[in-house]
Length: 255
Image (cartoon, rainbow, N blue to C red; front, side, top):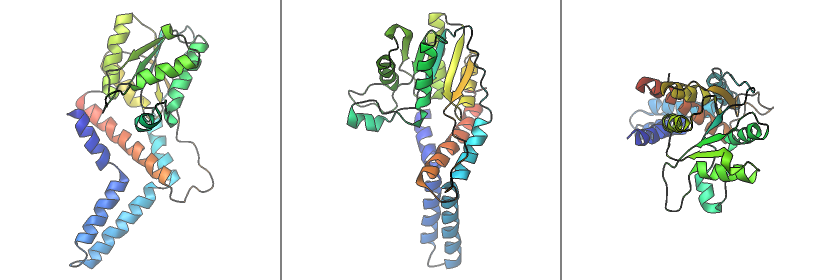
């Protein structure tokens, strides 16, 4: 039920959805109240342009990343680095039958560095399937294969394939960590996602160190004030994370 609700909210939290709803309301009232319809159309255009600007998108990410403070301490080595899913494109992988990493791939690439340099002894890959089709492999399984291709020994990789969201990442990872008796734990995820993820792990009784990567609030280039589809997508992701924090705190999933 929670997953179904989150999918509906994902759609409703998109600025493009808001613009379309405003435009629809304007068209429905176009004949009887043309002045109000023009106002609604203007608001739809203004809202769509605003969230399509790079400074707006990056400003939203700056707010999200403000609480992502690294507590990473390389010595002594961590027993395990926990890498949360959310860095592959499942639809693209169904077409290519190869791993397709997204811009969040810093998560797994940084984990590989930690393992190679001896700063972490093991890696726990946490990420299952939300809408699996027959023959689909979990994200964690794909990432385990990627790490092996990078020369990481298979006996340093542990896969957790049951979780489908950040709350379940924490619950399932806690069980694996307890089973292995790991004590020194490092949580690795994207900076904008790190505060909510850390809150979820604390809510299940863990106190990992945090290593945020994949920072997205850097300054932009010269065409910053031109509307861009990429900026609209980024704004949408940021708004979803903001609302996700509110929901997780309200439900007691994160501290």
